[in-house]
Length: 160
Image: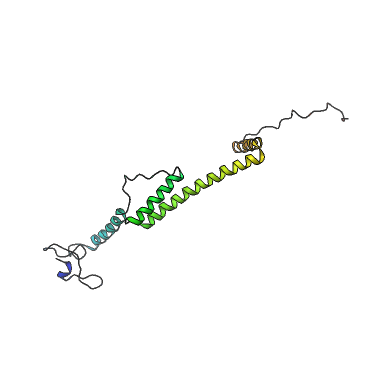
């Protein structure tokens, strides 16, 4: 039996198409026994359930973004899910942005290693070590006096 058979109409003015039991007075929206507050709560709960249905189960294990290959596999899995399953595109977009940030981090680390290698070749190993020590000392706040072993002092007098 349909709710519309009892005379209940939708907001569009058409008969309600909800299936109801033979002895029911109406569907959950048209039943005279339900208050406006109960109907409002049902509408809110329905929206939450739809969103919750699109969530991944708590048992889902996301692969760690510890290598470029893992990030690429993750993106491939998302692409497969988008094309084959009913998923929320906003969640996929968020996940792909996170994967993009991870890949950008890997690219930045690679560039830093490349720059370090170029500087080592250009200035020699000792210059790079000295630069690293200066950066470390400045970061830690350690100060060391310059070595004065190469300077000769002239005792008293005007000099030669």
